[in-house]
Length: 323
View (cartoon, rainbow, N blue to C red):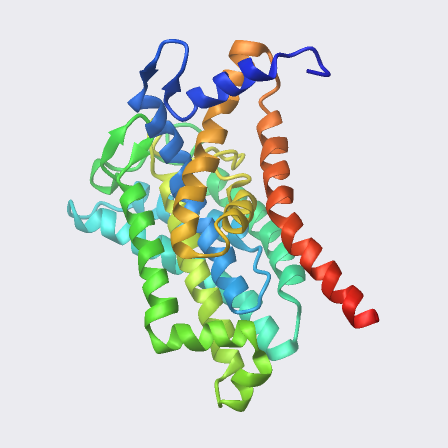
Protein backbone atom coordinates (compact mmCIF):
# COMPACT_ATOMS: atom_id res chain seq x y z
CA UNK A 1 0.00 0.00 0.00
CA UNK A 2 2.89 2.37 0.76
CA UNK A 3 4.27 1.65 -2.72
CA UNK A 4 0.77 2.12 -4.24
CA UNK A 5 0.03 -1.56 -4.75
CA UNK A 6 -3.24 -3.06 -3.56
CA UNK A 7 -2.33 -5.69 -0.89
CA UNK A 8 -5.57 -7.59 -1.53
CA UNK A 9 -4.63 -8.04 -5.18
CA UNK A 10 -1.20 -9.16 -3.99
CA UNK A 11 -2.69 -11.85 -1.77
CA UNK A 12 -4.98 -13.01 -4.60
CA UNK A 13 -1.97 -13.33 -6.92
CA UNK A 14 -0.03 -15.23 -4.26
CA UNK A 15 -2.88 -17.71 -3.83
CA UNK A 16 -2.49 -18.60 -7.50
CA UNK A 17 0.86 -20.12 -6.55
CA UNK A 18 -1.06 -22.65 -4.44
CA UNK A 19 -3.43 -23.46 -7.32
CA UNK A 20 -6.27 -21.26 -5.98
CA UNK A 21 -7.76 -18.89 -8.56
CA UNK A 22 -10.11 -16.85 -6.38
CA UNK A 23 -11.54 -14.56 -9.04
CA UNK A 24 -12.31 -17.47 -11.37
CA UNK A 25 -13.38 -19.65 -8.43
CA UNK A 26 -11.33 -22.54 -9.78
CA UNK A 27 -8.53 -24.79 -8.59
CA UNK A 28 -5.41 -25.34 -10.68
CA UNK A 29 -3.86 -28.76 -10.10
CA UNK A 30 -0.99 -27.76 -12.39
CA UNK A 31 -0.04 -24.83 -10.19
CA UNK A 32 -0.19 -27.00 -7.07
CA UNK A 33 2.16 -29.41 -8.86
CA UNK A 34 4.65 -26.58 -9.41
CA UNK A 35 4.36 -25.67 -5.71
CA UNK A 36 5.04 -29.28 -4.71
CA UNK A 37 8.03 -29.34 -7.07
CA UNK A 38 9.51 -26.53 -4.97
CA UNK A 39 8.40 -28.22 -1.75
CA UNK A 40 10.20 -31.56 -2.28
CA UNK A 41 13.78 -30.22 -2.00
CA UNK A 42 12.66 -27.80 0.73
CA UNK A 43 11.54 -30.78 2.85
CA UNK A 44 14.90 -32.46 2.45
CA UNK A 45 17.10 -29.42 3.14
CA UNK A 46 14.88 -28.56 6.10
CA UNK A 47 15.56 -32.04 7.48
CA UNK A 48 19.30 -31.35 7.23
CA UNK A 49 18.95 -28.34 9.50
CA UNK A 50 16.27 -29.83 11.78
CA UNK A 51 18.19 -33.02 12.59
CA UNK A 52 21.24 -30.90 13.37
CA UNK A 53 19.20 -28.72 15.72
CA UNK A 54 17.87 -31.81 17.48
CA UNK A 55 21.48 -32.72 18.19
CA UNK A 56 22.29 -29.19 19.35
CA UNK A 57 24.07 -28.24 16.13
CA UNK A 58 23.55 -25.34 13.71
CA UNK A 59 24.11 -27.23 10.46
CA UNK A 60 23.84 -24.82 7.52
CA UNK A 61 25.78 -27.02 5.11
CA UNK A 62 22.80 -28.22 3.07
CA UNK A 63 23.56 -25.75 0.28
CA UNK A 64 26.97 -27.29 -0.44
CA UNK A 65 25.69 -30.82 0.02
CA UNK A 66 22.99 -30.15 -2.59
CA UNK A 67 25.65 -29.12 -5.11
CA UNK A 68 27.70 -32.26 -4.48
CA UNK A 69 24.68 -34.56 -4.55
CA UNK A 70 23.41 -32.93 -7.74
CA UNK A 71 26.78 -33.31 -9.46
CA UNK A 72 26.97 -36.99 -8.47
CA UNK A 73 23.42 -37.56 -9.74
CA UNK A 74 24.14 -35.84 -13.08
CA UNK A 75 27.30 -37.90 -13.51
CA UNK A 76 25.59 -41.25 -13.03
CA UNK A 77 22.43 -40.22 -14.90
CA UNK A 78 24.07 -38.76 -17.98
CA UNK A 79 27.29 -40.74 -18.41
CA UNK A 80 26.47 -44.35 -17.45
CA UNK A 81 24.09 -46.69 -19.26
CA UNK A 82 22.47 -48.89 -16.64
CA UNK A 83 19.37 -51.12 -16.66
CA UNK A 84 15.99 -49.46 -16.26
CA UNK A 85 14.82 -49.33 -12.67
CA UNK A 86 18.29 -49.88 -11.28
CA UNK A 87 19.56 -46.69 -12.93
CA UNK A 88 17.19 -44.40 -11.00
CA UNK A 89 18.01 -46.28 -7.81
CA UNK A 90 21.75 -45.88 -8.43
CA UNK A 91 21.37 -42.15 -9.13
CA UNK A 92 19.44 -41.67 -5.89
CA UNK A 93 21.75 -43.70 -3.66
CA UNK A 94 24.98 -42.24 -5.06
CA UNK A 95 23.67 -38.67 -4.76
CA UNK A 96 22.70 -39.32 -1.13
CA UNK A 97 26.07 -40.89 -0.34
CA UNK A 98 27.88 -37.97 -2.00
CA UNK A 99 25.95 -35.51 0.17
CA UNK A 100 26.71 -37.56 3.28
CA UNK A 101 30.43 -37.76 2.45
CA UNK A 102 30.58 -33.98 2.05
CA UNK A 103 28.76 -33.62 5.39
CA UNK A 104 31.39 -35.80 7.07
CA UNK A 105 34.00 -33.06 6.67
CA UNK A 106 32.41 -30.52 9.06
CA UNK A 107 31.38 -33.41 11.34
CA UNK A 108 34.95 -34.66 11.73
CA UNK A 109 36.28 -31.11 12.08
CA UNK A 110 33.77 -30.59 14.89
CA UNK A 111 34.60 -33.87 16.63
CA UNK A 112 38.37 -33.92 16.19
CA UNK A 113 39.31 -30.25 16.26
CA UNK A 114 36.34 -28.50 17.82
CA UNK A 115 35.76 -26.37 14.70
CA UNK A 116 32.35 -24.72 14.89
CA UNK A 117 29.99 -26.22 12.32
CA UNK A 118 28.80 -22.81 11.08
CA UNK A 119 32.32 -21.76 10.07
CA UNK A 120 33.23 -25.04 8.38
CA UNK A 121 29.83 -25.35 6.67
CA UNK A 122 29.98 -21.86 5.16
CA UNK A 123 33.49 -22.47 3.85
CA UNK A 124 32.53 -25.87 2.43
CA UNK A 125 29.43 -24.40 0.77
CA UNK A 126 31.65 -22.11 -1.30
CA UNK A 127 34.16 -24.86 -2.03
CA UNK A 128 31.33 -27.09 -3.25
CA UNK A 129 29.90 -24.24 -5.36
CA UNK A 130 33.11 -23.62 -7.30
CA UNK A 131 34.03 -27.31 -7.50
CA UNK A 132 30.67 -28.31 -8.97
CA UNK A 133 30.68 -25.36 -11.36
CA UNK A 134 34.07 -26.55 -12.64
CA UNK A 135 32.83 -30.13 -12.96
CA UNK A 136 29.66 -29.02 -14.75
CA UNK A 137 31.61 -27.08 -17.38
CA UNK A 138 34.57 -29.36 -17.99
CA UNK A 139 33.45 -32.89 -17.09
CA UNK A 140 29.66 -33.17 -16.91
CA UNK A 141 28.57 -31.09 -19.91
CA UNK A 142 26.81 -32.73 -22.83
CA UNK A 143 25.46 -31.26 -26.04
CA UNK A 144 25.72 -27.72 -24.68
CA UNK A 145 28.60 -26.38 -22.59
CA UNK A 146 26.35 -24.45 -20.22
CA UNK A 147 24.30 -27.44 -19.08
CA UNK A 148 25.16 -30.95 -17.92
CA UNK A 149 24.52 -33.96 -20.13
CA UNK A 150 20.86 -34.87 -20.37
CA UNK A 151 19.95 -37.73 -18.06
CA UNK A 152 19.33 -40.98 -19.89
CA UNK A 153 15.71 -42.11 -20.02
CA UNK A 154 16.42 -44.95 -17.59
CA UNK A 155 17.76 -42.47 -15.00
CA UNK A 156 14.79 -40.12 -14.96
CA UNK A 157 12.31 -39.89 -12.11
CA UNK A 158 8.69 -40.44 -13.21
CA UNK A 159 7.05 -37.12 -14.07
CA UNK A 160 3.72 -36.44 -12.36
CA UNK A 161 2.99 -32.97 -13.75
CA UNK A 162 5.14 -30.13 -15.09
CA UNK A 163 8.41 -30.16 -13.14
CA UNK A 164 6.96 -32.34 -10.37
CA UNK A 165 8.45 -35.81 -10.23
CA UNK A 166 7.96 -38.84 -7.99
CA UNK A 167 10.68 -37.45 -5.72
CA UNK A 168 7.89 -35.74 -3.77
CA UNK A 169 6.82 -39.15 -2.45
CA UNK A 170 10.41 -40.04 -1.57
CA UNK A 171 10.81 -36.74 0.30
CA UNK A 172 7.67 -37.34 2.36
CA UNK A 173 8.78 -40.91 3.08
CA UNK A 174 12.19 -39.65 4.24
CA UNK A 175 10.50 -37.16 6.60
CA UNK A 176 8.40 -39.96 8.11
CA UNK A 177 11.45 -42.24 8.37
CA UNK A 178 13.44 -39.55 10.20
CA UNK A 179 10.52 -39.01 12.58
CA UNK A 180 10.42 -42.74 13.36
CA UNK A 181 14.18 -42.75 13.88
CA UNK A 182 14.20 -39.75 16.22
CA UNK A 183 11.15 -40.63 18.32
CA UNK A 184 10.84 -44.41 18.09
CA UNK A 185 14.41 -45.75 18.00
CA UNK A 186 17.03 -45.62 20.73
CA UNK A 187 19.81 -44.00 18.63
CA UNK A 188 17.37 -41.20 17.82
CA UNK A 189 16.60 -40.77 21.51
CA UNK A 190 20.34 -40.50 22.18
CA UNK A 191 20.69 -37.86 19.47
CA UNK A 192 17.86 -35.77 20.92
CA UNK A 193 19.19 -36.10 24.46
CA UNK A 194 22.58 -34.80 23.33
CA UNK A 195 20.82 -31.75 21.89
CA UNK A 196 18.57 -31.18 24.91
CA UNK A 197 21.10 -31.79 27.67
CA UNK A 198 24.68 -32.72 26.71
CA UNK A 199 25.74 -33.08 30.36
CA UNK A 200 22.95 -35.55 31.11
CA UNK A 201 23.79 -37.46 27.93
CA UNK A 202 27.45 -37.65 28.90
CA UNK A 203 26.52 -38.79 32.41
CA UNK A 204 24.31 -41.52 30.89
CA UNK A 205 27.26 -42.80 28.89
CA UNK A 206 26.03 -41.57 25.51
CA UNK A 207 28.73 -40.76 22.98
CA UNK A 208 28.46 -37.09 22.01
CA UNK A 209 30.72 -37.66 19.01
CA UNK A 210 28.52 -40.45 17.71
CA UNK A 211 25.41 -38.27 17.94
CA UNK A 212 27.16 -35.43 16.08
CA UNK A 213 28.38 -37.78 13.37
CA UNK A 214 24.95 -39.38 13.00
CA UNK A 215 23.15 -36.04 12.69
CA UNK A 216 25.54 -34.85 9.97
CA UNK A 217 25.24 -38.11 8.04
CA UNK A 218 21.43 -38.03 8.10
CA UNK A 219 21.46 -34.39 7.05
CA UNK A 220 23.91 -35.09 4.24
CA UNK A 221 21.83 -37.98 2.92
CA UNK A 222 18.73 -35.76 2.80
CA UNK A 223 20.56 -32.86 1.13
CA UNK A 224 22.17 -35.17 -1.42
CA UNK A 225 18.73 -36.47 -2.37
CA UNK A 226 17.55 -32.87 -2.73
CA UNK A 227 20.44 -32.32 -5.13
CA UNK A 228 19.39 -35.33 -7.20
CA UNK A 229 15.79 -34.09 -7.34
CA UNK A 230 16.95 -30.73 -8.73
CA UNK A 231 19.56 -32.13 -11.14
CA UNK A 232 17.29 -34.82 -12.65
CA UNK A 233 14.03 -33.12 -13.53
CA UNK A 234 12.22 -31.77 -16.61
CA UNK A 235 12.46 -29.99 -18.91
CA UNK A 236 16.28 -30.12 -19.26
CA UNK A 237 17.04 -33.29 -17.27
CA UNK A 238 20.31 -31.67 -16.26
CA UNK A 239 21.44 -28.56 -14.41
CA UNK A 240 22.86 -25.25 -15.54
CA UNK A 241 26.60 -24.70 -15.05
CA UNK A 242 25.84 -21.47 -13.18
CA UNK A 243 24.14 -23.68 -10.52
CA UNK A 244 21.06 -21.47 -10.68
CA UNK A 245 18.95 -24.64 -10.44
CA UNK A 246 20.30 -25.27 -6.92
CA UNK A 247 20.96 -21.82 -5.50
CA UNK A 248 19.15 -20.93 -2.29
CA UNK A 249 17.37 -24.22 -1.61
CA UNK A 250 19.69 -25.07 1.27
CA UNK A 251 19.16 -21.72 2.98
CA UNK A 252 15.40 -21.61 2.43
CA UNK A 253 15.32 -25.04 4.05
CA UNK A 254 16.46 -23.40 7.29
CA UNK A 255 13.36 -21.23 7.27
CA UNK A 256 11.16 -24.23 6.47
CA UNK A 257 12.65 -26.12 9.42
CA UNK A 258 12.03 -23.19 11.77
CA UNK A 259 8.41 -22.84 10.66
CA UNK A 260 7.99 -26.60 11.05
CA UNK A 261 9.45 -26.35 14.59
CA UNK A 262 12.36 -28.61 13.58
CA UNK A 263 9.98 -31.56 13.52
CA UNK A 264 10.14 -33.98 10.57
CA UNK A 265 6.35 -34.11 10.24
CA UNK A 266 5.90 -30.37 10.77
CA UNK A 267 8.39 -29.78 7.97
CA UNK A 268 6.03 -31.33 5.38
CA UNK A 269 3.23 -28.68 5.50
CA UNK A 270 5.81 -25.95 6.08
CA UNK A 271 7.65 -26.97 2.88
CA UNK A 272 4.39 -27.04 0.89
CA UNK A 273 3.59 -23.54 2.19
CA UNK A 274 7.02 -22.22 1.20
CA UNK A 275 6.71 -24.01 -2.14
CA UNK A 276 3.45 -22.21 -2.83
CA UNK A 277 5.07 -18.90 -1.93
CA UNK A 278 7.99 -19.59 -4.28
CA UNK A 279 5.58 -20.49 -7.09
CA UNK A 280 3.56 -17.31 -6.49
CA UNK A 281 6.53 -15.06 -7.29
CA UNK A 282 5.83 -15.13 -11.03
CA UNK A 283 2.20 -14.14 -10.49
CA UNK A 284 3.15 -11.17 -8.35
CA UNK A 285 5.40 -10.00 -11.16
CA UNK A 286 3.06 -10.69 -14.07
CA UNK A 287 -0.19 -9.52 -12.43
CA UNK A 288 1.00 -6.51 -10.44
CA UNK A 289 4.51 -5.72 -11.65
CA UNK A 290 5.89 -6.43 -8.19
CA UNK A 291 9.43 -7.81 -8.10
CA UNK A 292 9.51 -11.56 -7.53
CA UNK A 293 12.18 -10.93 -4.87
CA UNK A 294 9.37 -9.77 -2.59
CA UNK A 295 8.60 -13.44 -1.86
CA UNK A 296 12.00 -13.77 -0.19
CA UNK A 297 11.13 -10.80 2.02
CA UNK A 298 7.78 -12.38 2.92
CA UNK A 299 9.55 -15.61 3.85
CA UNK A 300 11.90 -13.62 6.09
CA UNK A 301 8.99 -11.87 7.82
CA UNK A 302 7.33 -15.23 8.48
CA UNK A 303 10.54 -16.59 10.03
CA UNK A 304 10.92 -13.49 12.23
CA UNK A 305 7.29 -13.82 13.36
CA UNK A 306 7.86 -17.47 14.25
CA UNK A 307 11.04 -16.63 16.16
CA UNK A 308 9.64 -13.71 18.17
CA UNK A 309 7.83 -15.78 20.85
CA UNK A 310 11.01 -17.75 21.55
CA UNK A 311 13.02 -14.54 21.61
CA UNK A 312 10.63 -13.01 24.15
CA UNK A 313 10.93 -16.12 26.35
CA UNK A 314 14.73 -15.99 26.08
CA UNK A 315 14.85 -12.32 27.06
CA UNK A 316 12.51 -12.96 29.99
CA UNK A 317 14.73 -15.82 31.16
CA UNK A 318 17.85 -13.63 30.94
CA UNK A 319 16.07 -10.88 32.86
CA UNK A 320 15.15 -13.30 35.66
CA UNK A 321 18.75 -14.53 35.86
CA UNK A 322 20.02 -10.94 36.04
CA UNK A 323 17.74 -10.25 39.01
